[in-house]
Image 1 (cartoon, rainbow, N blue to C red):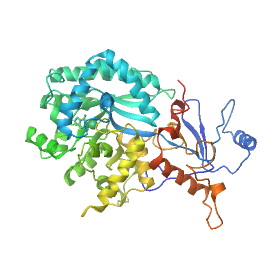
Image 2 (tube, helix red, strand yellow):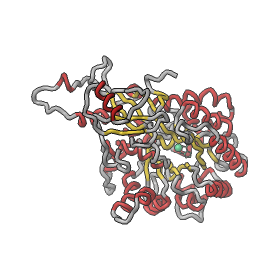
Image 3 (cartoon, rainbow, N blue to C red):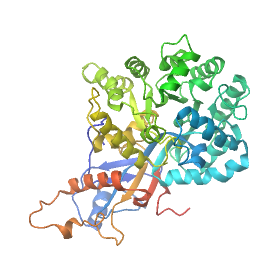
Image 4 (cartoon, rainbow, N blue to C red):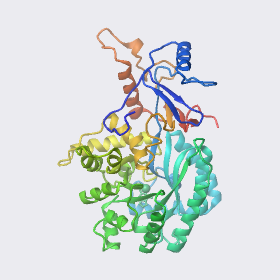
Length: 483
Ligand code: GUN
Ligand code: FE
């Protein structure tokens, strides 16, 4: 519940969440000490939290709800390539696998065939908010936005801007066309139906693929367009491989750093989402923190393509230091001055569309970084992993006031998770605390059990444990979903 914490979370065994008709959290009672169902109803009605018709859902042992996953970086148009090409490094992988695959989305019928099942799989993996990269095509990406909206997922959808250093069959003809199609897509997305809460569910995002694929003219145009539209998010890649950094600095000789390129073109700001950030220098981290931009940590991709390991603690510390020890920082300044970090699957640079798998890879990355000489940085605990997968991601896409944690007034974007065994026992894969305790065992408190369920879900769970995926109060996916 704690709104800004990457070090702490509440596990509440007797919590009641009341969701209103618009799908927002109307009330949150941290502890309701009444066990009888009837008494609970009476009590909740008496204290005025329930009125008229309502559905009461009581969780069984082994079940819990948690905030939905936020994937801050995923290429929907690369899913057809999932799990192939990992022998290449980034730039060859783009050339031999990715550009050929993305170019197929020139055919709208192909997009119409594959995008629905792609979005379905992403949702059923527990991702309630996705930051999608489409291909460079207007029609196919418009379709992607429509499909995402029709399935009820919260998302950002952008088409790639790319007008140089790409193969002739997969490149935009000029900066002007790239900008104009981007504007059309933004308009289309802004006209999609709003959520029951009266706000957009799908957001546009300006998506210069990466500096290397954009001419100075295109970056200038996109920067000016972004400046005129400060509320539109921006997403791109940064410092993913050393070769990419080298090539970028050659293409922009007047810029001191990779981050400096985006800054020069007014593309580095509070709602910019930077993918990867493995090879950022201290100066670049400082600049990114000053601009308030966020980083999508993509550990599965960073291993799969052999790109390297991001220094996530260092990224976070750049902000934490800036505010944590300064008594005159307001809450807003506090929020704006940090480098925020969320998780990205980066499909299909990442070989799995699930944030659960990404959590495991983030944990592994943190353990590897910890044992490297001169790196320091403690490995991540459950609280940090939970933060990165939910609230950190929400902060990265500037939705921390709406999603990422359970708080009164926020949207109810949630997962109903079950770690019960197949026979329905309140057991976790063979271990039943009620049945299997021996005299020597110290019984665990309900809170300790709950924390253990979460940890087990993170490290040995998968889609089968995700019974319901809920966005804005509506079930849109999961094992129980029939739609
Ligand atoms: N850099 C430029 N394009 C891409 C892409 O599609 N995936 C990844 N991982 N990095 C990129
Ligand atoms: Fe990517």
